[in-house]
Length: 111
Image 1 (cartoon, helix red, strand yellow):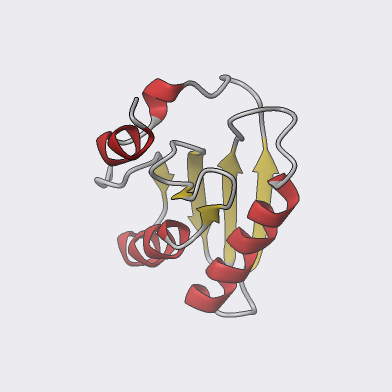
Image 2 (cartoon, rainbow, N blue to C red; image 1 turned 90 degrees about the vertical axis):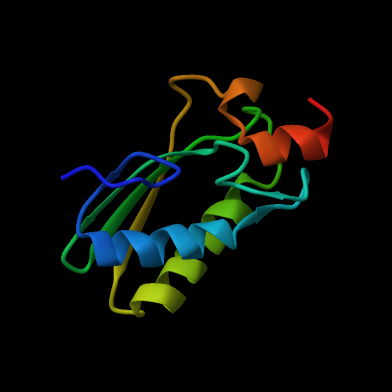
């Protein structure tokens, strides 16, 4: 079944709601906006006690990529429990583009 989340999601709806709320709390410190609004979350798969998150950065030279990935793990473990296995995959295809941002993020950045 397909759910209405701000990123592609595969898994149980209840887990998806907790995951979406957790990811909304992860902020890109350089942009001062959430990674979901920036369109950095390319997809999430949740099965049992395992969650796989595919993300990108606005630039391959992003100096805070590690910090963002650590924040994702921390927020998901806080939301789902520390026994949850969280795997964050940083990918570059397709490349990030400003069109991936939410309308709110575009307004905040004047785009």
